[in-house]
Length: 360
Image (cartoon, rainbow, N blue to C red; front, side):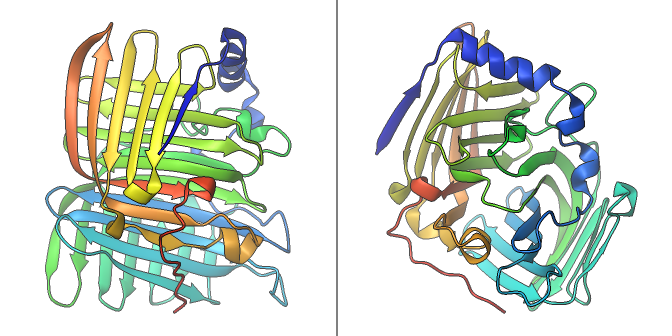
């Protein structure tokens, strides 16, 4: 188990906060960046749309749509990679990794025209998603208002503010929605299901590895939308943490934290354990996440396969989460989530986990 307390001085915290809030929006991500982007390199490139879907009492779906350019390509035309996973509330994860040469992308200049398609397998636009592959047949469409990460004029800015814009830090990433009600259908050859749920969508694009490692957890339920993450900045040992907490009673943004009020985190990825404490002026949030180790699976794409790095990812959609929220030192809200997502990568990865990256 590793334990870290980050408690820096007031000035660095204020510096990051001012950069986050007041730096020119010309460098910032926006909601319009849901659209595809032209590759910034003809050697290595990855663009990713992550759909994390929760259906209370049923389970979690992860649909990751990606385009990529790898060093061994004879021509630098992006190809398609799709990762599909379903973890029922009480059951084993079913997953597929799909690589295809044929890819239709539209809307480079207009998010309203966003279109990602692998003919016969995937079709996605700004409002809906359809997947049909083997025994994984899934559709979703928005059925309510988006809860964006930021309030104000740019709700699509990255949770880390302007820090990712610093030269050498890395790629672009933001949350399109922290949580949105959806209508879904799912069939696996044996069961046909439909109903309501929730989706969180995040988006990233880059031509080199954007972080030396990260810890990420998100969850959606009738009671709470949340996302908390910490990452090493560039190739340094410096960590930056941020997160979002939206319940019926509280709507909190935890700004990029490198100081002022402390950040504490503990983790043991080989035991599937993570604990985080973050603070605001009036609030203290403690999150404790546990997942059986056997529910994690490993991914090497895109870090190892495209960028030739060693940063493997381990993911579980079977984590149990306990939240305790304090206001002025008094416990005001406790929420338990029976199922959520937990990820570790880079130096946070557990090498006891078997490697797997199946191509189909």
